[in-house]
Length: 430
Figure 1 (cartoon, one colour):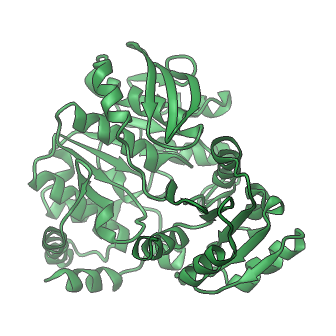
Figure 2 (figure 1 turned 90 degrees about the horizontal axis):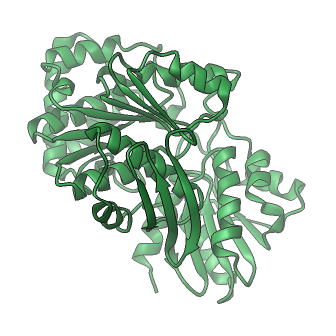
């Protein structure tokens, strides 16, 4: 099996990213598949991360800290921006095409023996766990794909369970309340684990504490971002954890919310070691975090920003970051495209689309993509000036054509849009 074969094999299995549907909520398929493989997910310790928003950034910060501390740190994240290899990595480097094909071939070999038909995501998760075991990582940082309890990643037992926050999202699978969603996310908490809890709502915090962790560290009570100031290319933070304080730490990510993610991540690493971290290593790690597609700047004059906000809570944050961190002198031009399951009008309102001079509507390259014309109708109803360019690359090109040197272009609404825009911009960078 070569790389193309591996992709074709995966694409022959049901894929939530394409359909928006999942198989019946169960871990049985994964448990049987992993058992035939020898349960590689139990051969290394795991830091397991769930939450509505901020998971990817938190995983990136945790992984960078672990690498700076000299550990071999595997990462499993989803979805990807440009290539599927991005989902499986070690110390900041994605798995190679050859290794990826080898891992998928190995999973394909045991699928029949397991007597199950796994999903696309289950196969990827199994391949990641096998690779981490084969290359003998010291620790794996695992991002939940959907909610938690029945997520394929949950066949592992996290030594540290991390919850970034809880908002209304994926209510078609859990809901209708935040408490319902919290109960599902709490399913990653295993006996003997340490819980790092970023959610502060008392009712929701009680749900997570009730899941039975050995210890709990809670935002504001046990850890916090005490200072969060704007700086060139990121933020300057004062961080407090159960074991120490870390003043004047530069974080190379844009947005006030990343300070909160950094506090959660640092507390998680402390929990993993049950000790404070060398402040110099913390500064080195946080000053070198890279997070493509999360308020990533890919152009100046005009300013071009990519952000993968894909739900209302994320869009609220995106609007705040545009105001606080960038505040362009000129006009704002938004390139937007959404997936089914999102309300375009709600997303546009959260983004503050009414303040933009132009909304360029496109269709994400996904079977779940909302047609650009449908998004345009929602934008026009809000009183926005609208252009419709179905193709993402064409939409970005249109925005660049009309933007002046002092203007800012924000590309957002779906990681499918951001990924396609990133590919186009990197190939056509001026």
